[in-house]
Image 1: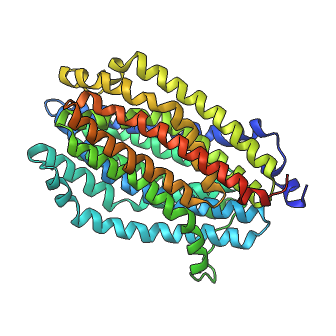
Image 2: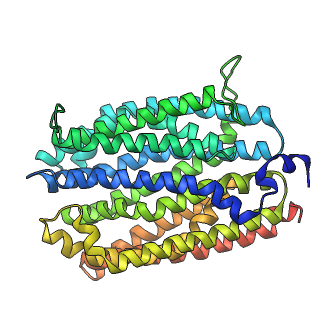
Image 3: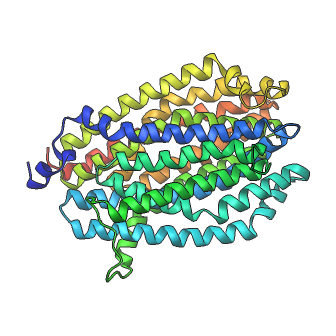
Length: 455
């Protein structure tokens, strides 16, 4: 065992307890994030007289919001992977440089989304023929969330940099600070409680960015004033395009991979009626309760796998992968049971007056949730590809699943059957095909790159 491995728990601690210790804070904090995303929509869906229109507007806005998150998280995942690999190789200076560059890239990305918020929102909503209250709500929500996206960009950068060092507690706390802030101010701004103005959907957007601002401030305090295993400093700093290239070697495929979800939803929205768009929007809010814990698990796995790959410890890399898959399957099985047994109760939270929403949503939830178990394995394999610097493999999997499988299969089903009820079957079909491809890519990696690692 190398000296570096004896100094960092990721190189020697028992694997299952290590994964749980690293992942549980992230699982908890991301579940809370999923909660406030869902509560956000529940509040909007129950706006007196305009709840259905507000929910429809937020559903149309969802793809651009996901695109924003894709850039924030994708870039930060690239930095996370680079930091953990450099720490595993014992190169502290390059790990610090990667963390500093990540923060700079977050600000640059924010500037891009300011322009998106100012100039792209109206054409985007007109593309879907949004009018009246739906257009008004969508425009208000997207403009605020996109133009003030710097808060979530910086917050996410700090989270991933800290997680790459094995610190999962402070990322959890800064996420919680933002989530709690959002939960408090959502009803106040949406419904106009007490001295707060009644802003409806605009209030939801304001509460969201206010929560992100609080999380960012907390993160900046932690990264600059707390002693961490990675240091962000601008003293004598100069942009190093080699570091940026290394970040985006994993980060860019991650951005594309997560952005594809936005394009997938855009494509599905074009095939669906308004009620179908709302069902899809509600599903993505609710499924975050299931997928977010898996992504939290990945946040714990990513630095462990990246560190041991950098340290050339194949045995621990495989052990992390095996344990991660088992935990992910348990999480997804719980989700499958919920979506199969109580879909009506899940939908009822968003709008108790719309029977058409219930009629369309129940069969949709039961069909889509069949994808959960194969998705569990694919998600962990994608995380392993990212952690070991094989971002292109993760990108190939995502493109295959969401562009080559889901949209064409959904289109074919809609044309042959002519009913939207069965269009949701495209989700499990795509996940099963993706899993087969993921396993084949992993087997190929074990015969090539991983052969160079020590047993």
